[in-house]
Image (cartoon, rainbow, N blue to C red; front, top):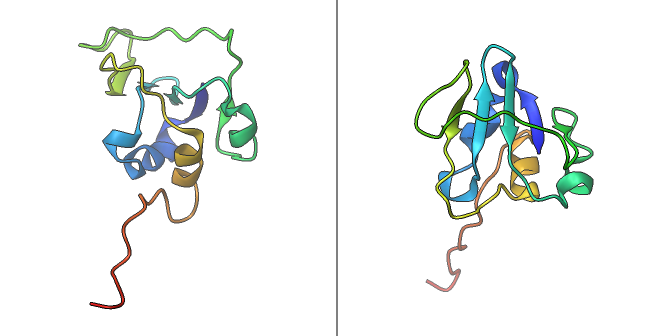
Length: 110
């Protein structure tokens, strides 16, 4: 799990298109935003200073998916497909230009 400050890092969430984003719970009162990432993400995200990487046994109290609970809510709700945010995509979203999906380059011969 990767944790960031909600007030200063929400832009990173908006830089990742929905199809590349896993579930993301948030706690506005505590100023937290969490990305659910693969357990192997620790090394890939270690150099991103805006993130705190939580250990696998760290507990996160999540609200129900359909409504907020105790101030926590889901900016991106889980949909049951098991998708997590890929570490490389998350790291790119914290870069100066944000994440940019690869696009097919125009053919120079046309």
